[in-house]
Length: 155
Image (cartoon, rainbow, N blue to C red; front, top):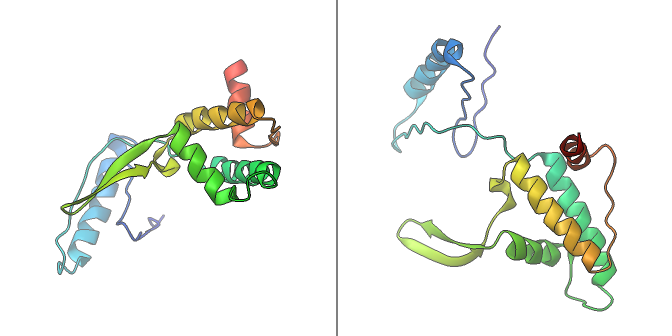
């Protein structure tokens, strides 16, 4: 079976699940290294794999931001879904400094895209409880990954 090749704008991602995968992955890596045009040097980084937050979790967060915006918008006209998202991420994820070359951009809101599934559940829990404490009952679809992970915690 041919390996599925995926090229990303940030580079290739190669996941190695165990020693049995090494030879197969090295062949692909060698091929990609030979194909590289080297007008820009190539970097190879080895790091532990973590399970990133899911698209389903992200979609739920965006849905909640719309629901909260709809609830608050009459009293606070600037509470758009995007501003709600920004406020919640600042409140629960905090700020960070981002280094771009030699430039440091200070106090930027952390991105939820760096969270793994467990961290995203914790963040969603914080958002859910904050909303409830502020009079907003958020929709939690029974088939959402968030609800399924919450159910697993109960078992």
